[in-house]
Length: 80
Picture 1 (cartoon, rainbow, N blue to C red):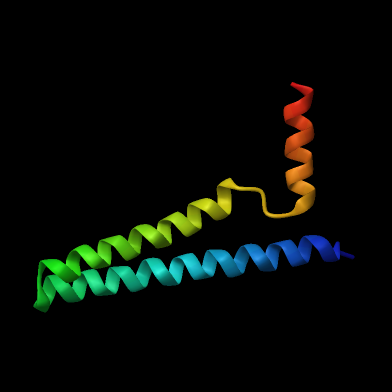
Picture 2 (cartoon, rainbow, N blue to C red; picture 1 turned 180 degrees about the vertical axis):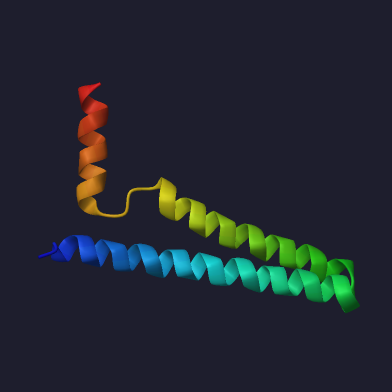
């Protein structure tokens, strides 16, 4: 039997990861659309949106997600 809190954490992780991927690929689409027809403005805008998506994905992996993880990180810091 699995732990309900770990399932909830995994669902939150998947939602943020999914949102980051959606934003990143949306930016890629705008970039390619600008490259194919419109011009430099949309290419730059697409790259900016892609960077936001990558930032969401990176932040999801770098920063603690739950209060328990934050407490554990603080305790580890105080011990060292």
